[in-house]
Amino acid sequence: MFNVCEYGIINDGASDNTDALRALIEKMALSGGGTLYFPPGKYLTGSVELKSNMTLYLDAGAELLASGDRSRYPIIDSERIPGLARRGYAGVVCAFNAENVCVRGEGTINGQGANWWFGGPDGTRKEDDYMRPRSIYFVLCRNVRISGIRIVDSPCWTVHPLCCENVSVTSVSIKNPPHSPNTDGINPESCRNVRISDCDIDVGDDCVTIKAGTENDPLQKLHPCENVTVTGCTMSRGHGGVVIGSEMSGGVRNVAISNCVFRGTDRGVRIKTRRGRAGSVKNVLINGIIMDGVGTPVTVNCYYRCGADMSDGRVFSPEAQPADETTPEISGIRLRAVCASGAKFAAAYFLGLPERPVEDVSLVDVDIEMDGSFGADEPIMTPMHEKTCAAGVFMKNVKGLSLSGVRVKNARGELFVAENCENVSGEVLP
Image 1: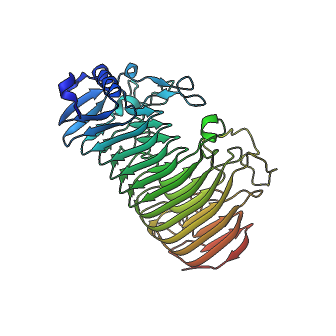
Image 2: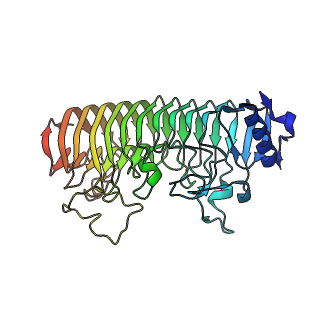
Image 3: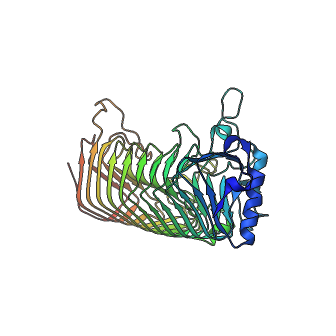
């Protein structure tokens, strides 16, 4: 146990402790690791890089304050991590090619994100040449544990394990303002054996996002994201509760989402991709979910626009295109025991590609009540748009669809629309 206050680290909230913490961590590494213990107080620092066999422990009343000084965060790119396509600042807490790393306790990591979100003199968004720091950023690590802590005002994504194995995030509270840009909650990317449980997430973007790299990420294509469990969590206000994609080129498979509550997110469970992205999403089980005030409870969209070349008409063409290795594949989506009230747009929205439909979908005991605030003259948007206003279940380019015990209340227009779908059984009841 290394009490940081015994090694020259000052807890006055103003003194920069970056260099002193780095020196202490090097000392710990020489002794084989240990616990970096922060007693109550405020600790200002730049990036803190843990080594193997290390725990960062924040006691109750301890707060790690992220410095706004860019020079206190090393640049992480392909020179540091071969094959890494993106260039970005190191995390507030980070580790690279390490094992047995842990962040836990009852204290707080304060990312002081306002130093990074809106840097212009008029309060407008300021972009750096590099991606903003994550609050916790672990790359190519094994045996990762994050538990108990509170994280607020993250500069960018909050908890980001990348190409890691055996990851547990438990009983973590994350709170980022709704206007904060790209402040996702927990984003396991190209990771294997991930468990996210009993977390409370309220952020400015997606609450939990499961990713596997873009078509231009050589490192991540070697690491599919697989065996991911999300359970017992509360998700609030973000763009999506649990989202898969759109970066899925390395493949996502075996995802179980259960016993969660979503409140006021734009979507509940969302899968998004597009032509050219490649990769697959296979075997997703969504079970025992309660949603309140969610825009669309479940959506699968193979025409997601963000990051695409809008000048390429083939990407978003409604007509079938030649399928190849860059054509995404989605199959094995199971919804069971989902209850939603106050849904604002479509009850469920599945839009596959005509050349490669979404396959093997089942909805069992799904009960969705639409928001009744829309007037009779409110326009229903086109079916090619996720926000089909207060609509029922919409399916297009889906092959193998089973419905049992599916109910939609207060839908405007048709309860169930199936266009270019094959092997459909069951119905939607009012």
